[in-house]
Length: 331
Ligand code: BT5
Figure: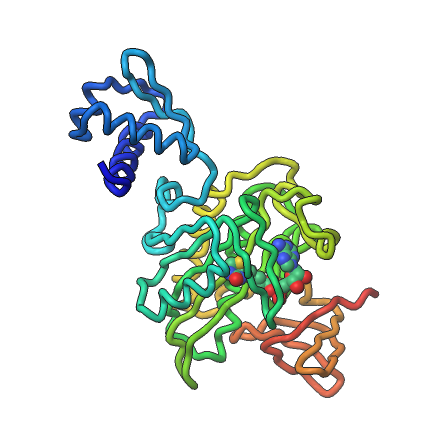
């Protein structure tokens, strides 16, 4: 039996025995269902165990599923996923340079909408303007989602804001945390960055052809797991909640939130989310400085624009910004 066949058999075995967690399935039942030999079954069990699944076998040969590892395997992500299209196709990797790069290639080859690329580790995870996203193995979620939103490129900033709202809702579902969105692309808890979003587009003047929404989420980092240069500014769900979070469940929950929001966004635009955006916003209602293309603007952030831009009240009148680096001015 070659590796591909053992893989396929272990997938079938897993699907079969995890239907009833802890139940001891008899050997005869399993061999009959999987139509394989005892030796082939032993290989499949070995592979599952090597992959981190807890599978128990008795002397009589019964087999029971005990638990699954919290690895971002495609199999795990599918199991119990209730979305219609988000995450229905998963490209899962152990280590990549950047999930956004792979997702862009897949999108150019017309991968179906909702396809995701996910990795346990990125060696060149990127932020905006060539900055780096620290993507330590096993602690975070490094995710890229492919969407074809049929919007004007002017409205593209809305995709990042929409994603931030879905993420903030997902995080809020875990605990009573002080989650904020810092326009244009950060999620913060208690003032520290827990996630960043990088949306990359392929578009012409009036039409977005495809978008890759990349999200880095700090899930199970302890403070000391962050590199020193960001330790004071970064946080994770675990650091805030003092408990380990199941990454696969978090991802499934996020995909569910995002799918619902994205469908509403396509139908009704970003303004359908205005209240939620304002409620989560760290900036709206505050005096801020915004650095844009080498110029610093100081004023009050007063609202979100339908394009996803930030509306700033300046001495010369209101102005919409589509990008920029923002700092809240301390009163
Ligand atoms: C972002 O950029 O916040 C967007 C990050 C997007 C990362 C995802 S991971 C999956 C996908 N594949 C990719 O290659 N990228 C996307 P920006 O606003 O430019 O923020 C970058 C800055 O955040 C850095 O310069 C650091 O100061 C800080 N930073 C880096 N890693 C961090 C982390 N893990 N947690 C908190 N802050 C971090």
